[in-house]
Image (tube, rainbow, N blue to C red; front, side):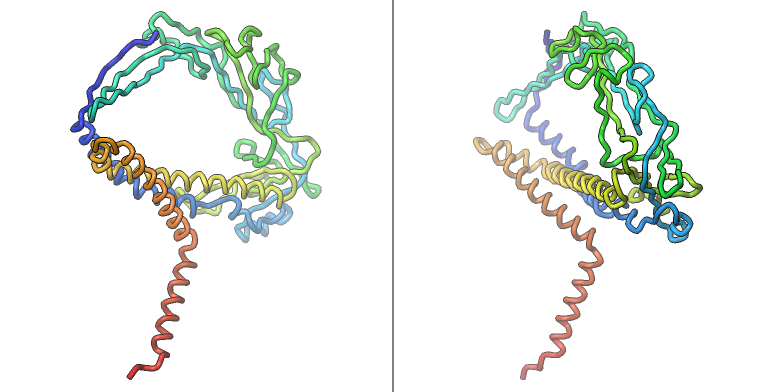
Length: 373
């Protein structure tokens, strides 16, 4: 049963004071957006750093030239599993996620408008949900009086093989399994035949009790799900990194700071195929960083102009619509500005040379044109 909590009456002056406080955060977010754009554009990326990598047989030459090393061949590893639930198999990584269907406090803030005044009311409720951290003290929370959660019988865990090797060109190279990052490899999708425990499967998870494997489980039901990376015996894979002393480790250019990186990658097929998978992953990260900068800039603009937007919201009839429209315009403006910033940062020297060339051409034309009488 829902329980009412604190009620707050927020008048126009309260909203205005809050918007003035938000201006300080806006002043931080605006330059922060350009920092994020710089990271998106200028951070070291494996797809760029690994270009020109040399075969493992030329490791000495690669070290002298400060280049990465790769080996293409067949993977092998220590067979690992989950000692509690999963039979050993060819996993490069395996993770167990344990959850319980437990009571959890939910807080909802309901808002009602009365002219330019907003009335906020906190409402607490207790609902059953799947969670990896069930609150065994939930009965002491408002709205959850009388409810209780049992202690979970299992927890989440991760497993990594102690040994990974790649056989290439008649040689076998050990690979540091703790640093290995797989790209383009299939994820773990287990069936009941691959389990050591008698669990019931439902919608991609495994339940300790058959009665829990439904769309309407009872409180206290537990389940586990698995994720990770696997590979197939006998197929071709490529490992790319550094080979300092006969073992593949992370490769680094030696640079430091937030734009630097270090990588030890494994992907399917040839060196070219693995590089394609790495490039695709890097592109997704670049897009993510860029969109993050757009959101950061938009939030900065919205907070910096908070008092003005608040005044617009006070205007009868058009207040809410006008504020929303301005925020949409801010979103488009942020995308354009961050896009231009990304291009300028990415191609700074090219743009600078172009500007110098144009300026030189204009000066030359001016000097070479005949003087007017």
